[in-house]
Image 1: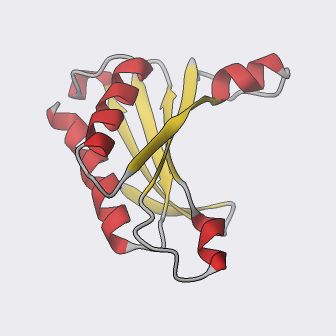
Image 2: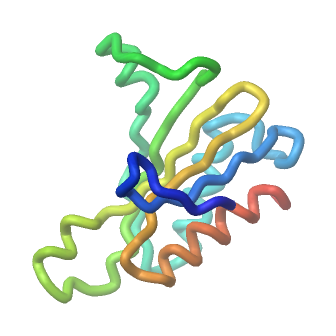
Length: 129
């Protein structure tokens, strides 16, 4: 898993997982996997799935070459609301892009280390699923 800055200001984690490295062969299988991970933690709440690919195609927006599907799994790790500004960094999402021979999984760094650790563990564990 690689940590980088997107557009020089958004801290993100990115993993490229070849389809030969995981038993999850479709975006739907990956969504189900993440939903199971989320459900296994009583402090995390699943919110929904946004089909970013379908939305962008519908509005005739540009889509990068080689991408055949792209969704965001949306959920919240919010253990507390210490101030109103915390709402700006919630909820979380994990992006799943199907690039044909591989998946590109990405998520923005959370302001809470346990959330980062969980999302990284879930994603890296895909190679063992």
